[in-house]
Length: 207
Ligand code: ADP
Ligand code: ADP
Image 1: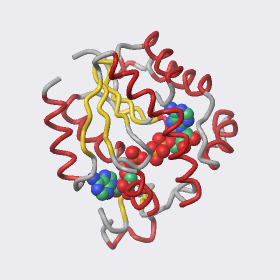
Image 2 (image 1 turned 90 degrees about the horizontal axis):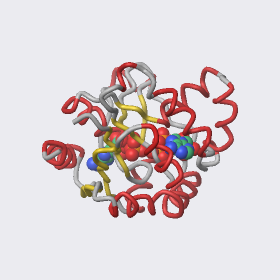
Image 3 (image 1 turned 90 degrees about the vertical axis):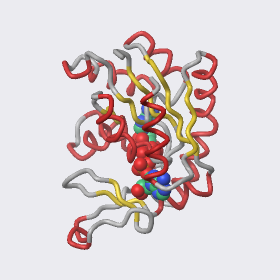
Image 4 (image 1 turned 120 degrees about the vertical axis):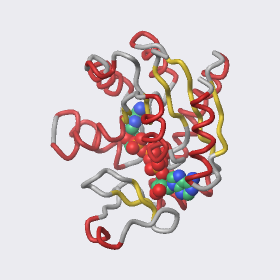
């Protein structure tokens, strides 16, 4: 399959957690707009400066900024056989722009209700050394690395509510948009990380 795959779902649904598994099965490099923006922010680039206030408020970064970022990323040689998008597109305008850049072969939507999202996001921790995503209860990190774990600045209860609100208003309609195009595969994301991983694996194997 030469097209790209989109991982879709609310913030905290488990997209990043499942992305490495899908990347391993398909050989497609994961492209996370959230990770790209966070690197820009920590490096203090122009993009980072532009995105900072939106990210900290739990609001979407403007479409034209994100589309420019993706256009550049897809020029890299490793993207020639398609990539695995995580957290992009998030608006219909972004999806329309993507149609001009690359072919989307499938959209895997991980579905999790809002109440579970809040618990997942508030307990999320990241290892800055390996990039691994942990959770204080659902995926505890090994004790040796506890000191270096970081919590994202936007992973607070208040910001989560704003991100969920934005998701329902701006991003969820995009699921239907892909559904109308026959590309949407929905997965129940409420099980354990391993259970969701098994569902994701069988969905990817049917592509
Ligand atoms: P997203 O990339 O969609 O924002 P993450 O993959 O970062 O989501 O997951 C959010 C948090 O929820 C992380 O702390 C992760 O460890 C945890 N998590 C992911 N999948 C599950 C699951 N199936 N059950 C419980 N917790 C999960
Ligand atoms: P999560 O999946 O946990 O919401 P991400 O890491 O995907 O987090 O995104 C973090 C923040 O980066 C978002 O709240 C938003 O401000 C910005 N962002 C990431 N991807 C996009 C996108 N495709 N469009 C607009 N803003 C984005």
